[in-house]
Length: 547
Ligand code: NA7
Image (tube, rainbow, N blue to C red; front, top):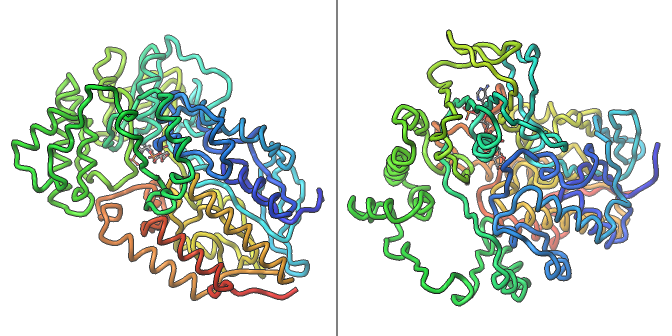
């Protein structure tokens, strides 16, 4: 067994990194175990061409260190993967985080030791670690999903998954590249791959709603204004549903002289626009303008109108009418899935070296040694890329083989879907914490804000137990049940849970996974207040065990 620490943390992404910083501050000995060779989590693994964050970087950044905020320069408003990974490395260097991190260590079993009140973790290589507290900082989108397609193992070309893209450069020059999947990863990668490959074939099962991303370089004046207001901005994040301050720099800084804000010409509800105004809107603005109308998320009629306006806009962007029709999402509405942002997605299908294959018409038959067979047609490929998503939110936790009191398996507890209190703890699993677990705002929130709030809560909880000489904490079964009921009830009636919606939020992308809306849609402030109530009232929703 290696070392003695107070808390073991599984995962060296932004959550595990902050846990090192925070737990040290609280006087706790901590050790992070990470499967990769370095820090960064999502941004370490997702190195595919075009990978980029969908939250502005001035907001998607740690708020715990004013000095860090003042010293880091973001080159773009929405950062590319390599810049976010650079930031993660900078944070790790600056706070000497790696001293308490062990890399190349994939944890394959997490077992509660009843007689010793501690967790025993075992790595793939057989190394054993023990500590009274265990924090699963394993991320919401960290287990890549590769569909089971017959013949896949026979393919003789290069194979990649966007979620485990190699660190070494991948040369696609002149090659026949195929990509399966048109979710966020596929949509971000496709334009870049098309620029690099000899020919790109896109295998699409479900067309996507995607809107053009903000491509702005960071302007020094904007960054400075954020820096000048960062304490206020971090406070605003705490009171926003999605953990984003939406801070707007002053008008003089906001946009170059002469630019106009024409969105204000239109009413706030899409249903209040007459057909002429709708046309004017779509002519004057990009697809993203549709998302500003709040009623498209709550009113089916508004949603239907928005979906049709969207389709009309796509028809205008794609030259070949057959390809355009194939690209149109029809069987679900805007707002059901996480909004995808792109750079030149539809324009890419106007390139001569790009072919769209509609799997809705004929699904993939088999993968052959030299390509993909669909119906009577064989698509010859040198490279096959899976952009097929993740076993989201529960995948990494279930894969860790967690066993609680009496050998109770998490897999068994969650057979019908995840059951947890506040997405932080599960009854039967004392002293085990999850960061941004199912039932917390997690992926519906700015992840950095959600992560810091969770790690702070966990650190305070451990400190409370220590200072009151108590050994264990776990939720009361009834706290867990009523929280799960609440999580489900707030999701009901939203576009996220309409019967036609099949998203990874619902686990619908994984065959056999229970259909449950996993993140908490009630908003970050409401959630945070509930967590704070537990802390300030002596944890009434939990059972605390004596030493
Ligand atoms: P997503 O959003 O789950 O997208 C996965 C894509 O892969 C989607 O288009 C799927 O089609 C497609 N897919 C999955 N299995 C198959 C098979 N068997 N055949 C054909 N196509 C398939 O994952 P992403 O990685 O793009 O994005 C996940 C999140 O990461 C994203 O929301 C951001 O938050 C970052 P389907 O829709 O299931 O028909």
